[in-house]
Image 1: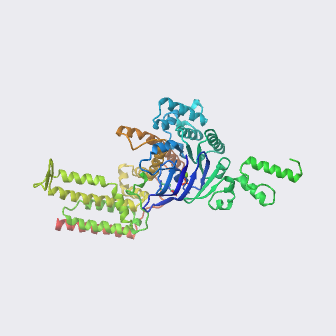
Image 2 (image 1 turned 180 degrees about the vertical axis):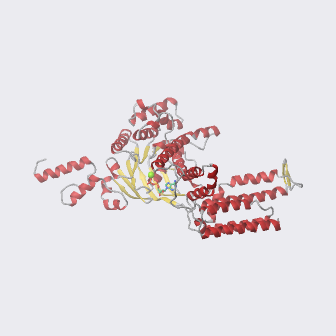
Image 3 (image 1 turned 90 degrees about the vertical axis):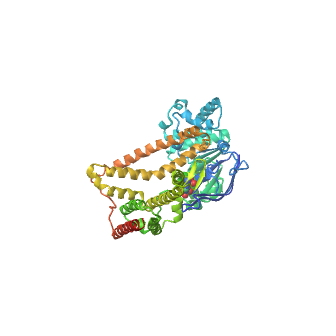
Length: 288
Length: 268
Ligand SMILES: Nc1ncnc2c1ncn2[C@@H]1O[C@H](COP(=O)(O)OP(=O)(O)O)[C@@H](O)[C@H]1O
Ligand SMILES: [Mg+2]
């Protein structure tokens, strides 16, 4: 399941005074099984970009290829595309509607026209995968906490067994603990199933620990892409577009600039801790 | 897309019409609507059109934008025209085919109705193009203030109206997002017979209702913590005050009415 963007431009309300270019000549390749972080300031076009991947929006000009097929073709099946590319939107409140959690998760598979037994099996499996216990299966989705709602929404898409899972700002509005839980969960799903995962966020802290590749958007264009360490070497440029490198990276970089012999591009807390210990021991002459 | 509906949405500009007191524009629109029904001959269209086009010109709202707004009601217009053409009976039919007979009288009435409706819709949408919903409700509240003597809750109704107007774009945007979220899960709103389609609306309506109730609750709470308790003793940040230009505008309206009455008397 590769997704290719070839000179894709998207305009909202084209030809009116409200015309707005939300994507400007975007070129991208997303490979099978990748874990990608899509980062950008609010309004940079992230949500617009991902809606092209499952055909909710079509390019104003340019082409999007999914599995080598042009999704703008007249006889291309949107339904099939949406079963292959699962998209979880930012607000779970926008999709939960059934009286019980299980029924809501079954909405997707039901739309695919699967057999009742298969539907049931998939919904239980998906809920288990997102860590919702069976005591909540028959609860109303509206009674759940914010984090739980988000999990149910993710399960609702997972139950369709997509080959690509896209999550639009899944951590927005969660407390730090809830954020880490959701991110850990997404990372687990990626490891366990091996599907392509695209994680949208406006915070580097969110994605740095987990993803293989970061795509940075600014003002309707893709401005940077590469593995986290490579992207973080552009700290100045990132700051210029309202993004920042993770705090730990910033600290190790500042230390390196002050003359400490520390590697300047630590991404995770653990990595930075080890580096600090190493430098400390070296200075004190303590053998490691 | 559902968001692209322009019918009557405020068009920001800085024109004399935009700056007029909303009361002048409301009264002016009423005067205009009434004036459209004052005459019986085609002559009457000359002053009504001159008046409307001058107002459009002064308002700086592009003509294209106004025409685009009309597109939304084209169906309604066509329906009225066709009914008029088919169902008006006269003496000598122009054209006969099976049970359909078309008379010259029918064409005439249809022509009249068509122009009248177009002018009527354009005239009233010009008011909403040039007046923000807040101004509009402020104006209505002031115009209807005398009704308070008869215990009509004018302030409350005006407040309800401004809240409703304020939330239309928000709810449209929300509907759009909900539809997308459900489509992402394979929902299909275009296919199937009428029952299947009606059923397909449930996944949109439930989240929409729930979020509307939530928003209403939040708003009520926010109003209450700021001590809102209805219209009594409430003052305004920007009280409506007539300026010189507003009196001139009233004068122009009077002249326009007089001109139309003259047309009616002398040309029928
Ligand atoms: N449905 C829409 N109609 C018009 N403009 C839109 C719509 N959705 C988004 N936009 C505009 O397109 C730009 C990109 O938006 P979006 O893709 O939502 O950015 P992000 O997800 O990065 O915050 C923004 O300026 C936004 O205002
Ligand atoms: Mg977004």
